[in-house]
Length: 494
Ligand code: GLN
Image (cartoon, protein in one colour):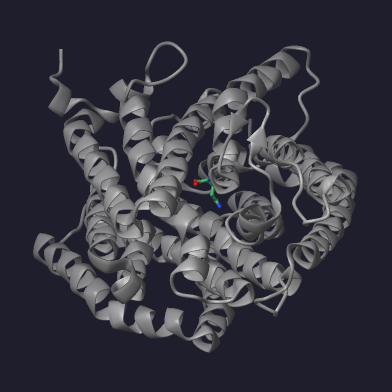
């Protein structure tokens, strides 16, 4: 029998049972990375308002810009992984940068905020898309277990997000922000160690692409490392100046499409039809995340100012609920949704992927109706029910489960293998645009007056959520109506 280090791709892909065992290594590595990422993400808006003394509006915009950069760099990370580094080296490099970024914030988040954030942006770019792509590599083309694998991986993401988001914001608000940022770096160290331990079990998965000239390959690898460091000051300039953020967002999307077009010219028509389907999913996801990602922006501020602390028998910080209830619901309900698809498949009534995306929008709209409904439970001080708020998170989570894990799996189903890294990056680039628009939407809802009363803020935010609810439902209906036509693009994809 082959030793672990010599394990071949077909040995990995010919696994028995529901999941390949390598999935668990990727599950835990990603879980710790998300601990770090969501720990930081959960702190951003509150930290910018409470410590950097930005207004709600400014912090919403800044939050959107930072998150947009984070996800935009996943495209660049995916590209370099495909062409030069391979997924394993990319992950390692990304992890190191994330650790350094968190440590810098841990030293003094107040003084070095944007330096730390720059490193987190680039680090996540190299890490995030590539670990998801490696999950795709565990499966043979057409293996019907692929969606379930991504479902489990998605649960891992959310275990990390749940604890990272809750613990860091709690430590930050109650003890020290520096300590909380340092803690998130500690989580990333555990993630990286987990990955290093797992590396030998992954066989050839994620190794650098074989190059005709090894010396050239080595040089290119170093060029990527050096290029990353050279890019850091540029990123610093872009995130500290919202004007440049706008420019960056206007350029990166079209440039990406031009690049993708140049790759698609080389593909056959049958392959391109699937690529078009992937692009439709990607476009829909931009809109989805623009609504969904109110979570780290405007909903974070809503939680800070407009919610009571009672959640049934508990007394709990609403920001902790805001940061972690979504993840908790994902962990609890993603297996149920997985079972639902299996049951529907058996009965031959499983909706196609476009209908699932359409339903995601219906739930998304429904969730924003519940966020809107919060205004009817408010008292004279402008504070309202944490229970209703948490209920809305339950509905928005169902929406997410109808779209996000499926989207990851689809990227590896609909594109040829040599473009997996890029396509996964593109999937996350859609999140970048979503985040960017989310920041703008959130800023549009926020009061420009820092002294606005809680009641004024409540009315403004909930009116905004009302609008999102209406647009979410309309989009859902349109997508479901056109699904039978779009379905034709992905003939033969299970
Ligand atoms: N919550 C998921 C994750 O962290 C999806 C995020 C996204 O694509 N916007 O991976």
